[in-house]
Amino acid sequence: MRLGASIVGDLRKVLADQVRAGERAAMTAIRAETEQVKAELRRQVTTAFAGNARGIANAWRSMIFPRSGQSLRPAGLVFTKVPNVIDAFERGALIRAKGGGKFLAIPTGFNAARGRRGRGEKGMRVTPAQMVASGQAFLRPFKSGRGFVWCLPLRKGEQTGRRRRTRLVAGGVTEVGTANRKGREAWARGLLEQGMVPMFLLLPQVKLAKRLDVRGAAERGLRRLPGRFVAAWERESGRSA
Image (cartoon, rainbow, N blue to C red):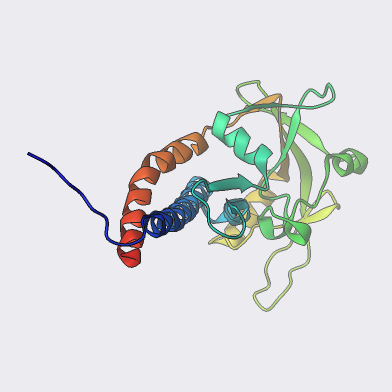
């Protein structure tokens, strides 16, 4: 028995067409998988930190190589513009005070414009140095004995606005925000009865919870990539036929 095979047409052209189809498939697969990994990492951040971490989520970026043209060996890069933050919450880092300091000063929600921390004018308003300079700050120890609440005395300011909301003034240094909490006036009265407002938590160290899984997202992407590549090559080969 004799077996024979023949190729109709130009073999070099057939092979070249397959190479080009493979290049297009490889680029399509790596581009799609890179975008999926980036999207997963952004979801991890927003799930872990809710809407307050939109900026950290959007700091995840991606690049495809080569930047132009086609290749059988493309690469996708997913990176973050805030690597220290991501690393800390992926490892569950232990944070201590720098420079031989005994405590970390962690601002509370009251120590921010409208009672919310953020950037610029919405960020922390009173610094530890201002607390010391005021001459009015005092400490209240935690029941556990592991830290302190750093407070300022509180007084009532003039009522303002159409609703005549009570203004809270801490140590003559700043107005205290209570955000848009329900029962804002009840919050104000409660704080006034205590006669103080917590501005900072002083802790010797903070153990962050492990909230992110960057390595896992990358490994899942690598496992999906071969199947994505094969499917893309089949589509591209069909177009070339």
